Length: 263
Image 1 (cartoon, one colour):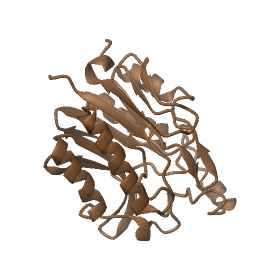
Image 2 (cartoon, rainbow, N blue to C red):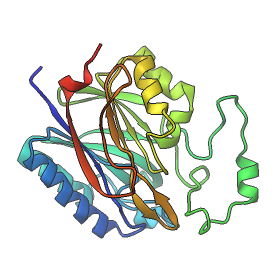
Image 3 (tube, helix red, strand yellow):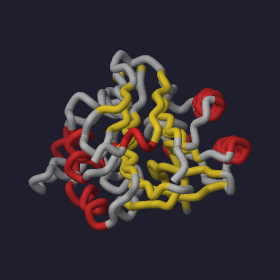
Image 4 (cartoon, rainbow, N blue to C red):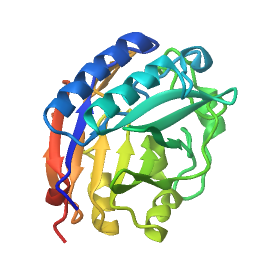
C-alpha cells in the first residue's frame, strides 16, 4: 500500500449556522489537501452542531452543502469524512458521510443515541428527562429527537477499510464488538464533547483491538459549553502519534498511515 497521509481537523463551529460552518470547513479541507492529505477527518455534527430544529438545519445527501465536499474530494483525488446533521427519508440523523473522487462512498448513522444505557444495562432516560431543559443543556437530547442507525460498521473508503462510530456509540461494548468481528484498517471515532483524549478511552480501545484510530472532536463554544478538543491519531498499540491542543483552539494535525502501525 502506497504511503497515505491523514489529516484530522478540529473546528469551532456555530450552532444552526450551516452555511458558515460548511464554508469554514471547506477552506480547512482545501488546506489539508494542499498539504497532501489523502484522507481528511472532521468532527461530529459539524454542519449544524446541536439544533433546536434538526429537520430545519439538517441537510440531505444530495444537498449543495454536501456537494461542495464531493467536488473538493474529486479535485484532489482525496476522501473527506464530514460530520453531517442529516435528513434522510424524512427523519433526522447524526451522520458521518464519506466523500471521495466519485461522490458519496459511505454513510454511517449514529446508532447508540445520547443519553444511552450504561455499560451495566441501566437506562436513566426518564431521570435525564426529569431535569432536561433544552437551552440549558445545549439541545443535547438525541433519543426521541434523532433516528438511530443500524449499528456500527466497517466501510471500504478508497484503499482503507474504516470502522465508524460516533461519540456516545463509544460507551457501548456492542459498538466496539463490530470491530472485533470485522477488523478494519483504521477506526474513526467522531465526537462532539468536552475532551476526547483525557479519559483514555481511545487509547484503551486502540490497544485492545490492535487497530489504529483517528479521534476527532470539536473545539470552542457549543452554546455555553466550552469544548477543549484533543483530536488525535493513535497507533495500534494505543500510543499517541499526534494530538491537537486541548485548549479549545482550532487546529489541523497529520499522520501517515504507516506511523500508526507499531505492532
